[in-house]
Amino acid sequence: MDIKFEKREQLKEKPDQTKLGFGKYMTDYMFVMDWDRENGWHDARIVPHEPMLMDPACVTLHYAQETFEGMKAYRTKNGKIQLFRPEMNARRMINSNARLCMPEFPEDMFVEAVEELVRVERDWVPSEPETSLYIRPFMFATESSLGVHMANSYKFVVICTPVGAYYAEGVNPVRILVEDELVRAVKGGTGFTKCGGNYAASILGQVKAEEQGCTQVLWLDGVERKYVEEVGTMNIMFKINGEIYTAPIEGTVLPGVTRDSIIHILKDWGYKVNETKLSVDDLMKAGHDGTLEEAFGTGTAAVISPVGEFVYKDDKITVNDFKTGDLTQKLYDYLTGIQWGDEEDKYNWTVEVC
Ligand SMILES: *Cc1c(COP(=O)(O)O)cnc(C)c1O
Image (cartoon, rainbow, N blue to C red; front, top):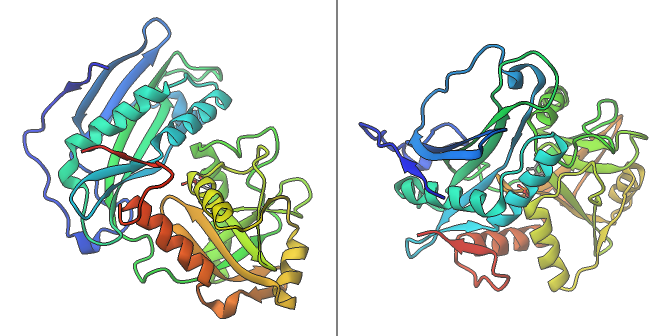
């Protein structure tokens, strides 16, 4: 790809690395590329991160033709910068775009765009423990028209934001509300894609959860409200009687890169991993009879997030006395060790950028 570079007149001041939070500060530059029917993808460029001009009739504002990805660049102890399985994000975006009738952004171009932007923004990759540069590739329709159809033009953009540890207080168990009324996804829908529309529909569940003192929602299947699927922005896994259970990828659950990585590691460590439907009744039963040993969410932002309690209708169960389980902690340490370059990368998951 021939990527043009437009220099900023003045670089921004970098924020305090101990107070980054999540997604508050945007870096100096962004990658942009355009697509239209005649020219396909063209005009790759890295330009100052600035507001974009948009016609009020832009179809994305009306019909939500938008998909996105989430990944990170990590600074290792010896100062190098690496990505984690970026090709998985590229392929997932291809699948998301196919479902939303948006043009395919080729895998090699996706990885090159991300790598080149990270190289330009290398000074923005923080070095404090558990900090990283969060990378947000996204695509949206740019056509101005109120007709509902596949648009004639799209933009692919990548922005970056330095982030701190997802939970400022450290990895502590969270309380989760099992949502028994609203649904996130059904088969045939967009549950397996990362699209803005899925999130728009999930915020009401999040608000309900927060009203009940929970930080996240556990979504059940959209047909019977019977089987556990995933948590707001994470996949979820349970350790019951020494075995691991997680929902299968069958159209409604997002195929997480972290989920896939953790399954690999668990199998290597000799655990039986059941990618099968688990009913919420069986989960609550396992919680009451003591066979539910650990539960944790997996996702790029928080990596591994232990669950301390599930609230379902009038019932609730506490997991491992509301403490982070041994396996949960071990997985967190090992996976973050690979990502930040402290553990040997025996799976070849990391990609050095500079
Ligand atoms: C992004 C996301 C995940 C986690 O995927 P990772 O690739 O591990 O970050 C899980 N569930 C939903 C709904 C998501 O949007």
